[in-house]
Structures are given as structure tokens and as C-alpha cells.
Image (tube, rainbow, N blue to C red; front, top):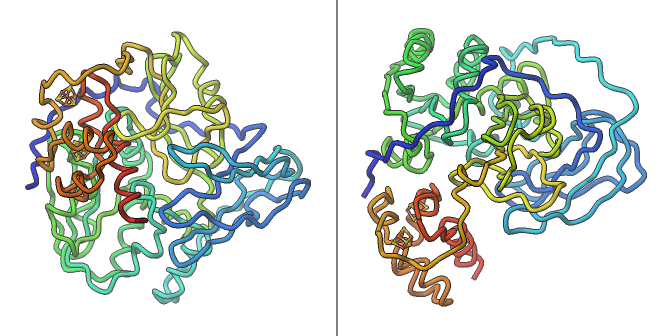
Length: 411
Ligand code: SF4
Ligand code: SF4
């Protein structure tokens, strides 16, 4: 059963600079061939080849694939496997140099384009849903949607992307919602917000045609989980986060490939925290330098947020289309302790929004008993990461559940 009465997590301290910062282009970009759900894209370039900015470097493999474009001009200097989470994925290393494209911001006239053309354009430009990593042309290619849910909630306690976009790009977001409502014809538009963004949500509701409705949430981390929102609003609802809407807007209105990403860069180890517009493939280390470097020792570098991200183990770990937050956490923030014994505190059970029994599931996985774990409703896990976050023994349960779900599907 679903419980959105989630435990309220302490949000990261406010970011001083209240404007989106545009990060410089990195000297070297590491562009992953898998930045989405589905098979890795097929690499189309060779070592030694010169690439233009926005040049196509990998093409979609199959219906669920996405095209990948180069976020920098330069020379391909290596194509090699890199660790991404628990996978080894091909990464294209590009040394930045050569000619930069002079961007002339000219708005495309979308009025004469039909839905098929708009979806094909999203596919061509490799646009990915920034929260679920689904290719956006697939996510929007649905025959019936009874509710369009616009999600203004943040996906991580360290993430401020939604708030910053609402502060600076409200008009663009409203235009993006209008494009989507023409694409999918829906009976109802629901805007999910916290009290902090209520005024902006009201403005969106007033300006978007149709039967708009507000749904106000507490500022709890779990409220933003897309699978939980889908259970709340029904399986035929379509959930779109404002960061995805912004990427869609830039793709359709300005013809921009998805090769930039809005990222919250946080953690108490950094001199400054910021919300940055970043070129895809920018190494984390470069972003941390852009934030003034470290003022305290970083115990853990995390890609993808404190709750459901993964620890960066290589210096080449870089920004992809499905990343909203990167962190440099101190030992105190990361609660780094040796993995211990289960003390049967049952925090994992008490706080699981799906009422699962994480400690038993984890025990089953470590004993190699996937059959037992599946009987404990593993497929219901929404990968929120709360069990791992709260566990005093520091068991990385959420990552184990993700891997076990993947193994179950492939067996
Ligand atoms: S990640 Fe953990 S807390 Fe979240 S749904 Fe899965 S088992 Fe429950
Ligand atoms: S939170 Fe960790 S220590 Fe507590 S019961 Fe669950 S697995 Fe055991």
C-alpha cells in the first residue's frame, strides 16, 4: 500500500547564489554511451576523429535508445569502458578544442507541426526524461492520458533545480506545458508543488488551459518519486518534472540537442553549492573546481543525489542526461561508517513507502536467494533509497534491490 506520509528529511542548506550558474566547458569531456533506460547507444566515432559541437557521436540502438551528441567540439582521444553505477559502459573521451558554434537563439514555429513530427524531433535530438531516464519521445507517445501531472517537487534533499527553474524560466515552463497539452490531449492538468512554490504553481494553473488543479505536498523527499506519484494519480497519468519540460522546450523551440543538463552541485565539503547548467560529459572534479574547490575533506563523491545516487569511483565520472544532483559529502554528511551487523532497529521497515521488509530482502539477496526475495514483492520497490539512507549498519540495500530486479528481468 502506498504511503506518501513520508518522513521529512532535512534539506541541504540554502544555496547562496540564487541564480543558475553556467559552468565553463571542460577541457576533457567523458560522454557515456548509456544515459537512458534501454540499450547503450552505438558509438559512431573513432579515436583521432574531430567532432563539431552538437555533432552526432552515438546513435540509438533499438526503440528505447537515444541519440547522443557531443557537448563540446574537439578530438576523440579515447573510447573505453568506464564504471557507471554497477555497470561497465563505453565512454567517449573528447579533448575540447576547435570551433565553437555561435548560438543564434531563433524560435521555431511549431504551429504547423503535427505530433508525429514533434516526437520525431525529440528522438532526433536525443531528449531524455531527466528523472526516469526514459527517452522522452517514448514517454510522450501514449494513446490515452487521463491526467498530466506537472511535478515541481525536488527529487533529492540536495536538489534545487525545480526551484531555480521556476524562479528564472517560469514563462518558458508554461509554454512547454502548453506544447505537451497539445501533444497528448488530456482531461486534467495537476500541478504538484510544495508551499514554497505555491505562487508559481497558481500562475501555471491560471495560464494553462484545461481543468487545472493544485496538489500541495509537504517538503518530503518521497513526494517526488515518480512511481509513487503514478500510484497516487493512476497508471494512465503522465508525470513530467519541470527539468524535463525545460529540456523539451529548448529542444523543440530552439532545436537544441540534449547535451546540457541542469545539475545541483552540493555537499558541505565544497566551498560553494550551486545550481549549474552543465555540458553533458563534464567530469565531477571539474564541477567541484567551478564551485571553488573543497573547503573540507570529501569522504564520498556521489553521482545522482544522496538518496538514490551511486558513489563515483573513478575520476572520469561525469554528468549524464539522467543526473540531477552531484555531491561532495563530508564524513559527517555521508554518515560514513564501516558496514556493520543488522541491529534490528527496523527503521528500514518503518519508513519503506511500500511497506516492504528491506532487511529480510537484503538478507535473501546476500544469501543468493533471489527466489525468496521475489516472493517478498521485490518488484514493488520504487528505488527511493530510504532504507539504505536510514540504516545504521550502512547496508546499501537500495542498490542491491535495483541489481536484483535487473537480474530477475534478464533471467
Ligand atoms: S528502496 Fe527501500 S525503502 Fe524504498 S521502496 Fe525499496 S525497499 Fe522500500
Ligand atoms: S535499518 Fe538496517 S540495521 Fe535496522 S533493521 Fe533495517 S537492515 Fe537492520
